[in-house]
Image (cartoon, rainbow, N blue to C red; front, side, top):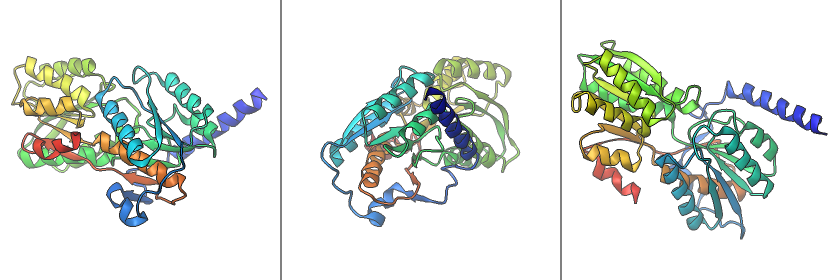
Length: 332
């Protein structure tokens, strides 16, 4: 029996990896903006009493995932379900994250909202869930066999920062990219959107594109070394705010504050505080709390039998000092 189960799991994983070559939330045609759900499908149905939803996040050490969790809890209250939202202690505990998912499957949760640490680590859990639990992939890494995806269009994240640099520095300059974890869908797409858009002006040259694994200290060290090599660096684009805040410290230490721009991603509160201080230049806010609420709404709609598009896209916006007040209301 164990051998048969293992073979089935391996078969499912191979099929998943094949699917991964073709599924991209950024380009998926079966897609709807989250703001259009009510107009297209009507009010959110009332769920069955006692429906339990599991939320498996990457880690609560990163404020982004704390905000996503708060969105899950708001959504639970708003739509009348129970949400058990958990995460491993760090963003590299892929086995621990899978174990959490398996425990929730064993408890019979009707829906699972999963944010994988990599594009493959939760595939065995999705295969195990089968038809017994609805699996919704929520942002960041992409699990291609999840029935639905809720989150941002990651490619556009990088586009928005590149467009600002194209407009601000038409004569060109040197730019560096601090990437997230190598191989993760969100990091790849954010970086691709940035590089492809920035290439419209060859005078804006990307002198380095280096992964720092979502880690603040690694980003600090990497940025410090890059600033020594390129002392007149125009800007950094970072795949998340945690790394961007580390880069800000390196820029300050090098005496380049106000001269070398730093852009992050996620829209965490610490990024907003840094922008208001005049340190971090900007962040592409992906409104994680709102994303969490939308994910719960999507789960409730699907459990009620609604046939939604495969991808539900949530909003994002480039936030800078002159627009902080406009977007800060979404933090409440």
